[in-house]
Figure 1 (cartoon, one colour):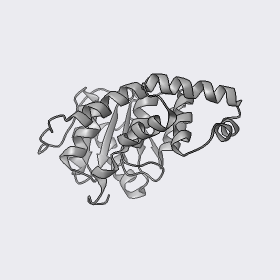
Figure 2: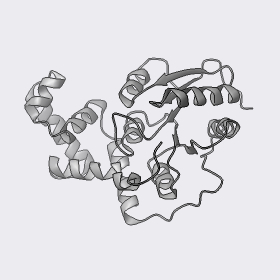
Figure 3: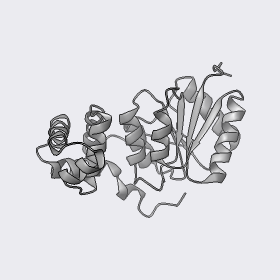
Length: 227
């Protein structure tokens, strides 16, 4: 077993209490002395990650109440690029696994896995490996996947405040509404939008919203088995 400091912390992000409990049990099996913290939404997870004491690993369910598709993973990867994020999901489609890995997931564990397999997968990631199910066959990259992975890299250049502004743009909010929510002037919002367009290499806020919305990959999840 990998030696993990008693200061190590794992973050479990799942809105289902029973599965949070199952993941907690698997973590305890792998590392009995680890401090495990739970979040029921991406917004709650981001608040916890803002804590001065860092986390060593996040275990993330793709299906969360405040995000769609890969949006939760993307938020964590862009805000906290050094934090290993492992997807623990009921979706086991090879294309979904491939997309998650292309967006920087440190591993993909099916929710159908046994507790002992969950524990082994967690140990594998903590040892520096990228964990995938045994029966997973990698998908060859396609142009769309390459473009999406490139956009993820560009998103990583945004500051936390710029990410907030981008999220509000996706909600259709006007500059004055964003300024009110952030308690800043409209000039500041315009400056943020200009920087967002520059860093994402797009020419308008509409194009930015369209390109970033493609990352949700909602079509991959349509008609798949529920969590």
